[in-house]
Image (cartoon, rainbow, N blue to C red):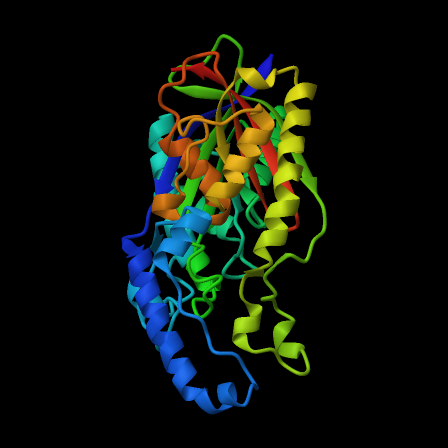
Length: 376
């Protein structure tokens, strides 16, 4: 019988490192200048003064303490507040393909395979730098892989949705070995001008090598994918309106209107029970008692949300090692977050242990992957 396993993981972490204090200092300068420039309008009640941010509030409200970005200087410049990327020629590798390759090489090395051994590549992330040609096909060419490759986007759930697509391809014989990539440059669609959004995100890229193998074969560390499940429900509470029709709109929208935005409290109140119930049903349908789940690698959006989901699912307070958090170092890296948690925090589990990889976010969307450690 054929089973699908995760054979290797990879992670690209940018060199730009920003603490909450640095981010708060930058926004405080920018907000102070904005308030001075609009003092007359503020006095007349035509607009509100921008409130100043607080590093302590950020950590308490979200669990985010730090993030990595592709361009620290551009993000922290109070006069710019966005990364700066030199334009690249068409023949040069794209930014997203470049970081995807870095993560891919780590995953391939961990799995003990080469790029030419792949016959499927899926890039899943919350924003793609161009509609076509696909970043995945660009990576395919750079790695010398065969088969097929494509891009997809289900926002923060892109990794788990991509995993299910790859699992289906492997189980149906359309591929034997595949690569899932999540190149997230979230700093490029973050509004660093607003206190409620400026701290949320960080940049990173993750990679997973998945294989189809026959029972009794295989060697090295492997995680069997027992089952996957996806669900979506439409909501406007998380939006990003950047798209090819923007230049055709009348009247045109300001650039900041095309960036990420959300109604955070509504998202938390609606998504947390959805995710907990989704996981409860998925485990029950798979015949896995909740108490047998040794680890939860959840989407890394907010520490309080993850604590709520884990406690609701398990019916008790959860130990830090049972639901690892990388928010304090990486912030919210969108689709890459749960995979970073898996990549960095899977030690201590033994063959036969059960675990869950789960992502959730805009859409709304939820994806869950039930795992069992097959080999050390």
